[in-house]
Structure formats: C-alpha cells, structure tokens
Length: 61
Image (cartoon, rainbow, N blue to C red; front, top):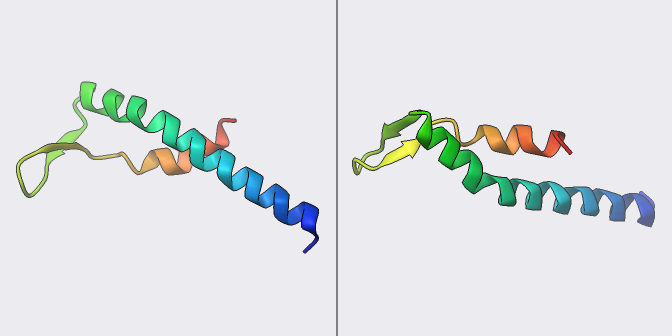
C-alpha cells in the first residue's frame, strides 16, 4: 500500500468519524421527538435506532 493510499484512507476515516460525531446529537434529538425510545434497565428512555447513524451519515457526504 502506498503512502498516498494510506493517508487517503486515514483522511476518509477521520472525516467519517467527525461527521458522525457532529450529527449524533441532532439525530438522537430527532429520534427522541418522534417517540422512537424505549426504557432501558434503569427506566431511562433511550433512542432505539441510534446505531443507524454510524451506517448512514458517512455516505451522505
């Protein structure tokens, strides 16, 4: 693997990480407002489909 290819993969991984990190609070608030929450073992309401952001957001940019 060339150095350019390695740097490109690292740059894309960092861009994906930060795009998910920036969008996560907005998506969690959207899921909470729409009622897609379930109680966890402590009784706190948590969004049920929060993991979908990791799969969806990096492909939008």
